[in-house]
Image 1 (cartoon, helix red, strand yellow):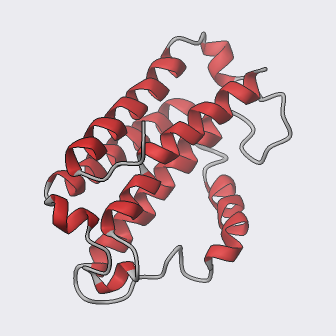
Image 2: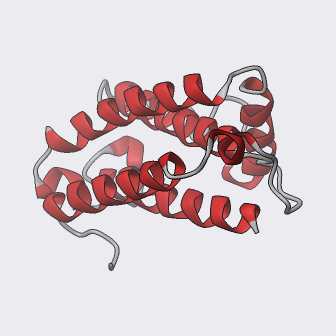
Length: 165
């Protein structure tokens, strides 16, 4: 499916990809869900991937919360730039090392509901008009939300499938 350009498509695709990811995980045995990936990636198991998704939801929600007040948020995070995103992702990975898969999945469910609520409260124009909000720079709010939802869930499912081979 092409990149969303309307609220309805964003809602549908984010929900579809989120459900696809969760259904895939649900259809694995508990042993498979908890096993280490065979590939050499930073995210070594499903828990790592799920926690990664959750934390990017949290960061996106924080950007939004700060941004709507008119203040420029620290994007992607305080002390990091887009060029240092690999270091940020490593920090995220370390942050959730002691979190079990069940807790990580619950965290993801909860942050998904919050990010979905943000999408639902905006119009097509508010979501997809570039430069509408000072904090989104030259892009749109929708672009950030796509990256944190539908695109990210698709990435996660591919990574999990690849890691299980």
